[in-house]
Image 1: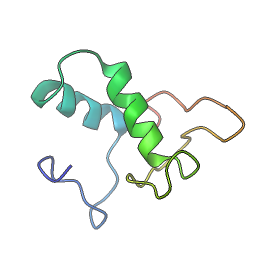
Image 2: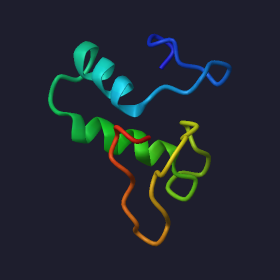
Image 3: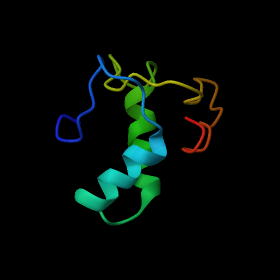
Image 4: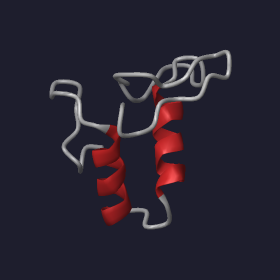
Amino acid sequence: MHELGLSSKKPFKKCARVVGEVLGKFHPHGDAAVYDSMVRMAQDFSLRSPLVNGHGNFGSIDADPPAAMRYT
């Protein structure tokens, strides 16, 4: 995330943009795996402490799915 210039002091970026940059630079094998990983890192109930500050609908503990990446 540091290489992409993402930090907590900068404005939020759309997940679709971040996923596109990751696909282009690091992981050219499909966007679903990258987005699912980002969603999991933003959920406070999946990890002890969230690694991504999510802005939008990233699912719930009741198994509600997250919104599509173009909305978050």
